[in-house]
Length: 321
Ligand code: F6P
Image (cartoon, rainbow, N blue to C red):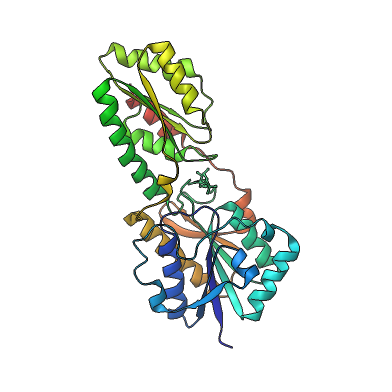
């Protein structure tokens, strides 16, 4: 049997996952491997849901959002007996390496399989940018560009009515989408889980101060991890008398054609993963660090603490006055 690699996408989908799958398939074949696509995340390894890919299986997917391999958050795969079943299945196909594109839950699965003798390399694929070891995750840029496009439209209507709009953007535990999008749309307030907030100080006072200088419409960005946009909206309206509307952008941020940044990052990381597996190296996470592609031991990566960009938060506070 010829040597084989496999690739799967796991967790929430992110624009650029297809670009990563394409890179793994093409680089794998380029380096003499047979490459399997595994469907529906780790479940594909449990259900035998795999297909051998060829160069043309990944044609015309570079510009597509979502993932052609589908994705899942497999509860079953968290259990050791199913991890063993998946490792045995990989061995039955002579799979010498697996590339997993997903978030930190997916990394844990990759570590478990690596420990069972199937070398795995994980790529950070999530719109949230919440992977501590990497200063960038595949999908982040596209999600933010979508959010900016949507919030610019919301601003048009808020401006026409002299209203305030409170907008929730995604980010379960991480305020990066909120912070960077908030700066890009000129938000009055940006509320993120990393910075404790006080609605009077961080929202109401800022609105009053800006109102005094002639501003008539306001955008407040709230990260999903903080939530409560309906309540914040009502509070602002009651306290200021400014008509206020709440919008939850939701899953629109997860879709769409990936930006150049996401296509490039996914391609670069996908090829780097194959390079490691070609050398028989597994149990690694590919990351971006200061513009370089680097890799870390999965446990080391999972133990890293994420740092919020306090300087960028301060930048936002200085200009949104
Ligand atoms: O992790 C990415 C993310 O989009 C989060 O921002 C969000 O909380 C979560 O996924 C929602 O996931 P789903 O709707 O797929 O359960």
